Length: 66
Image (tube, rainbow, N blue to C red; front, side):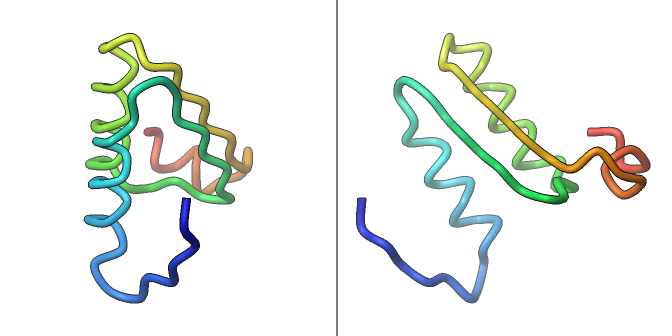
């Protein structure tokens, strides 16, 4: 995998990369508030792909309730 800096349309790019997943997805972020990205990850999990999401247990994530 090549390292690349992305500065525009970041959520769209992440979604495209998630769509490519064939066996597993590992994500570690402080805050996760994007419902569309969560839906893509949920679809991948429903397809039998292992999805791991690690995030901070704080008021921002609790308030969003994704």
